[in-house]
Image (cartoon, rainbow, N blue to C red):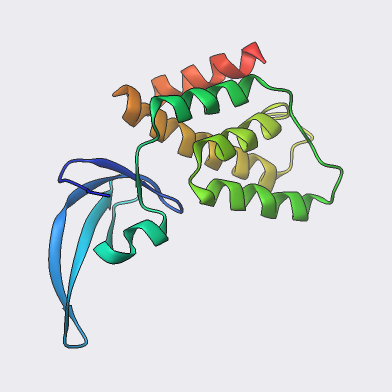
Length: 161
């Protein structure tokens, strides 16, 4: 996969970032080419070795088809497993960190029903907001809008479900 300066990319555990370029670094006497990615939201710079980009999960923004599938997922019926919250929370975290917009949309869909409800736990609200934030950031980059407009679009799709 080729990454160019200015490309928006997704790193599974950090969300949407911007490629600043490809640098050559020296580490332990070896020369190493790295892709420099910045994440404005948390003011972080990540350097991913070019030969490890695919295995690390670094990818370009989702295709229109993948994002449409994610938006359709939001319209589906919430599937809540009857397992303990701690186990479900681990599964939700794994889906969010997978970086796959469809899996993140599943988390948003499943937790949306009680978003803001008094019976929703703090950790449930945190996971919901993290998933919503990740999905909105990628949608905003694809649509070339801001995160607020993308969040509103996601909420509209959730209401249709």
